[in-house]
Image (tube, rainbow, N blue to C red):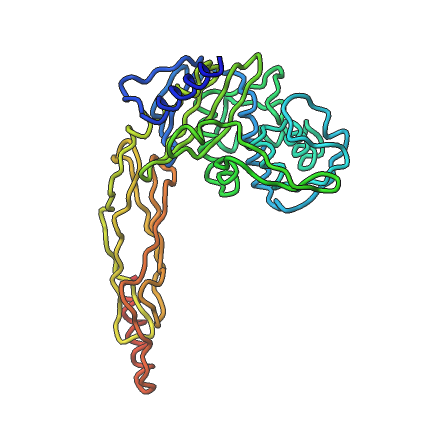
Length: 373
């Protein structure tokens, strides 16, 4: 029997690592979605807008709110009221001292319901007030079909999301550096307790080990929701996020979904229509400096809707160093910002040194600027 288990695990590993052709993608899930992790574009949809329970993938929102709150090194003392929750645990006991940082990893790795409940009460005062914060944040992110009733993901009436919106939640959460770091961690060594002592947590997300380039994000299971999984992978500079809800074959399905998503994303060097600008200079022997908008590599499905907004000052003062940032190019897809790039000085410009000429140069520069406004 032991040998059979080893063979099954080996074959699963081969499946996940070898890659599955895009044409073969299909899942056993009740709902599934794949999005472009850099732009949020939908790549694959299966019952993508059906409202379903999402189990511990709920903790993506709980963890995001904790990261956005900050003060991750702040230490709190766990109370008995905070631990009135069942299910998976990071091992907290009443009286334990624990930091927000450790609660984050307790949620994302051990899927601790205790960590989620402690976070909720620490930040919101009560679980009810914290879930209100969760729902307000969901509305801010445009998640209209998502409703949180518990911070841990335990089943509750009305606690639901959709595959599309859970993918978008992960898309926003992964933009947070602290969240992304925790989501990608296979293990974490933490110090908490009374007194705090060293212990190691392991991530429940097997995709981090089985799928090349995996960077997160969260597992989940209850009897009502079935197996739920949000995964993400980055390869060759491209990021795909996959979601399945109620999927008995989630590990292998996510390998197929991520392969499909990554193969669908195209890297395109986008150049704006106007690629250079003349920027007036004050205090130099020259009136202006020419700056250039470099081509920007965009990971997207289509390039037709990409826009570029250039933000430059009306003029700059000498001296200017080569490579100095003078402005920003903001790239958008369908109105949403997908990236920015610095606009830098292509050469150095010295301030004029001859004292008798300074006044004349200043007036000449000023006249040039006024004539070109």
